[in-house]
Amino acid sequence: KLKAIFNVESNFMDNMDYDYCFKKGIHVLATSPVFAQPVAEMALGLTLSIARSIHIAHSDFKNTKEKYGGKISHENFLLKNKTFGLIGFGDLATSLLPLIKPFSNNILAYDPLVPNLAIKKLGVKPTNLKNLLKKSEIIYVLASITSSSEGMIDSAKLKLIKPKATLVLMSRAAIINFKDLFRFLKRKKNYAAIDVFPIEPFPKNDPLRKLDNVIFSPHRAGALDEAFKEMGRIVIEDMHLILKGLPPRLCKIAKKETIKNLKPQSVNFN
Image (cartoon, rainbow, N blue to C red):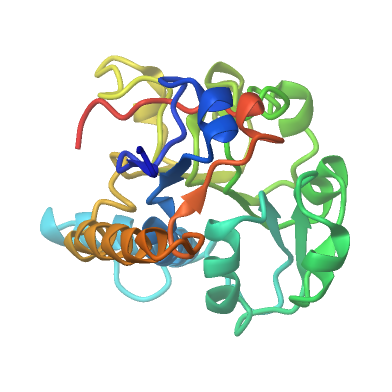
């Protein structure tokens, strides 16, 4: 009589017999859509902080070392007319899109799981990963972890990124080789914002922490009270639909064609 399983951690974990669920018509659902808007807004906030040294100016002021005028702004930049790159074009990217479109229409996207036509319909140019890394000045990593995306941004890919370009990591840490990322950021005049890490809590002695060209966020982009309450609401609404014999509409549905390729990471601290 089981109708549905809701994963409120919002990842499709390898913790059940998906084939059996598909065979028996049991919906396997995740509440991940509720995090799209909070993560998108945090991504924009981190980008603006990097662009205008907001976090640095605030810290200086608190420590009575503030520098007035343009003394810390010589490497600042506008978001206007920049080329944005979206790695992954799912819920996170489509929520971020209306937030960055007022700044620029030069937006590239890479997602092998999304048809080019679907990307073009939203006014975004589909491209391959190498071209996106070469052309973009602000790069958002928003993709899910799959067997093909794990570790796909390594030293060879990072070398393609323009000098002074900004990398904003908001989805899954396993997409990037963090050792390569540290070496890249240490050597190059680039910027990064990081909300997710391969080990959480992140080791206190990791040298990445000491880099001045990185802004850190301890996996809190989606951790919003409003989002947690919205999880409950969409579960209840989808339960009502399922009990009426209708398909769920609000939670993300596990699909047999892609579920075996996903490699989610469990969240130990919340």
